[in-house]
Amino acid sequence: MPNTSQTHPGPVVVQLGSQPFSDAATQVVRDIRDAVRAALGAAPGMPERAQAVADSLKIDLNLAWKLVNVIRTPDPFAAAQQLPGSGGLEIFLEAAAACGVPSDRLANCRAAFKNFEALIEIHAGDRAALDSMFGHLASRGSERADLAARRAAFKANAAIVGVQSRVQVTTYLLHPTASDAERYDVTMLRGFVGLQRLRGDIGWIIGRTRHSDDALPDVSNPRRPLDPEAAAAHHGVPLIARSCSTPMPVFRRTLGADKMFADELVEGPVGKTAALTFFTGETILTAGNRRGLDDQSHLRIAAGCHTPVESMVVDLLVHADLTTLVDPSFSLVSELGGAQVHSTPPERFSRLPTCETLEQAGRGADELDIAEHPRYIELLTDAANTVSVNLRDFNAHRVRIKFPPIPCSAVVQWKVSM
Image (cartoon, rainbow, N blue to C red; front, side, top):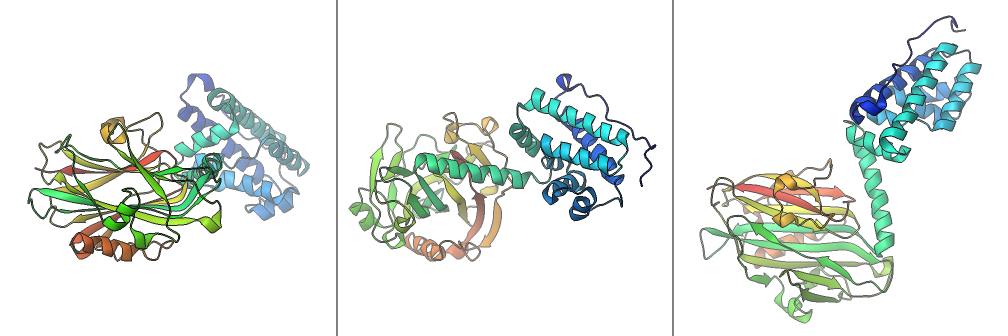
């Protein structure tokens, strides 16, 4: 049996109301981990695994698993998210007392748990908010928490707005303008794979696109659809006919006061059996200047996401001759509050935490497979052929974002050297 006369230092009194959250949380979490570790260490056999803890204390395996994770998870804030609720903690303390864990160690646990409850009340309001705050402090384990929150938001948003999609794809090819050595064109592909309506009365805007270039402000650039016949047959929406599911989805196009085109999917049948796959494609001619006006010039491309999607893929292919476009950076930016990403200085972006990064994908399109759409590279190759460029001449970059929070934009920015 453990030595019941042994003492263990208790938690320090925490001045929760006078400390910043991160400081108070650090101390509270450290005290909880120390107290739980000491209590478990005093149990018979000093169990270290969840099954051993469950057998030794005669408690539920799930509760034992949480307790073990509290002390073994490397990041303390990720560990704190595993802490059981008050009912589970009381079961643990009663079971530990029945096994002969010294009373001073149990008292230390109760004091640490009381501080934890005070942390919730003062800094968070409820446990769910506290776990979210811990997730943003955690250096490890936060990715899983963020993903769970994004997945839950996807399901809720889809249920509310009545539409969802497996994948949204936005692709940009930046290539030299044939008639002007100082300019470049931008060819864009935008599409959805497996988009389905959840209610039949919904029309849905599937795309608005804006291209912003500090070196060429306030210029209206002509656009050319990659499939002119399909565009003419669908009210100007630049659909690529061979990329669309059958029957062809029906769209309408409207031009807003802000001179942005809105392409809207009209009402139609619901459910998985009526799911749609489609892509639009067009080229913005003389979209930008190869050289910046000064050393602060930037090219910014913002791929917006306003539809609940399981995954968002953004591909950027930059022609090797565009040597002034160097070192692209990536941010995931919230558009809540009506933020206009294209006109907002980067220092004022409402950046969202994300583990995703913009990855280099080599030359050409060999590394740009999309499992959900096996014909994507074929589509990309056809687009390149239409504008008379060779994909082998492009440096490719990709970012794939799981359950992107809406509304948001994946913003890629290059410094445009002079």
